Image (cartoon, rainbow, N blue to C red; front, side, top):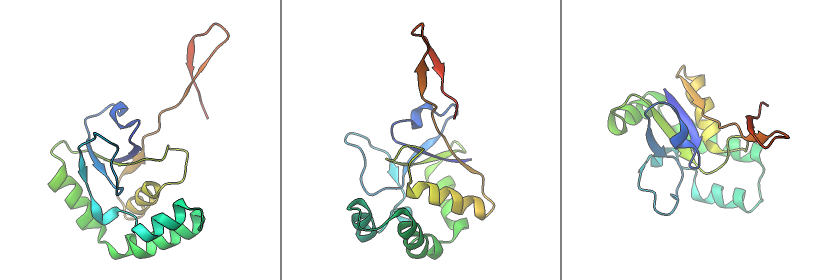
Length: 138
């Protein structure tokens, strides 16, 4: 299984996984493997972060500049054979599960090629009138 998740929540995945960053910059103090072929191009990332392009433009450009140039079989083999001895990996980036992120494009790309992949999303908890935590359901 190839999970996708953000840095804040990946340790909550209930199975052993090997974390692999798919972004250019890691959180301070985190020392994990990265997979540069899936990084967004620096110029595309810059114009997106500056608000010069929208999600749709980013999706089209990232797909054309990155995903369409990769062999999905090679990517999966790299992730499993080079990085993982556990059988599952988690591709990490910064954005929360409910926000647009290139890792969601990666997940959709993997699925469209017959791979098993899913976003691991942590549901937020709400307090009921007694102050007890309860799970929030979308």
